[in-house]
Image (cartoon, rainbow, N blue to C red):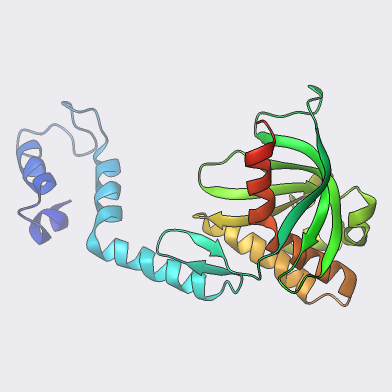
Length: 227
């Protein structure tokens, strides 16, 4: 605490500490007026110091440089893979079974359509999907238990071993188009790298197409399917 006061004597917190930490202070561990442990204050000050901010920014830049599928704008990791459009071919079917519907599952429904690339190549896509309710990212979650997604089934064991036990848990696979959570971005990169290195060309192409269509599918859900 004294180091902070010496380094930033004009900072309003340093001036407050000068008043609080007098010779009459009964303890250095807590403040009787605020009830806030000084250890917490010290950590908060350290985290907000210019040096700490610089270290966090450097760490973020280092993380961003390791993530080939994202571009970092200073705040968020934004998906930068080739964009694919989702086009509806049949009306969606709402999934509202209370036995399975969870509060975090927004716009949950069975959608049927095709994924169309810029060069007009297309592939069938139909399965149960939902948007994950989360303030820090745009996440699409799909269920792989569908004939159009059969190539994923042979990877339900090796993929979780590489990228985490929650990947493909209960048959669900996540696709994140935007996030400010480094861990989420790293996990999505791990999944991408796994399929990119796979000798299974069918599942590689399928994964890349769905990843590229993530924003399009989320937009479709938000515009057409009730929460």
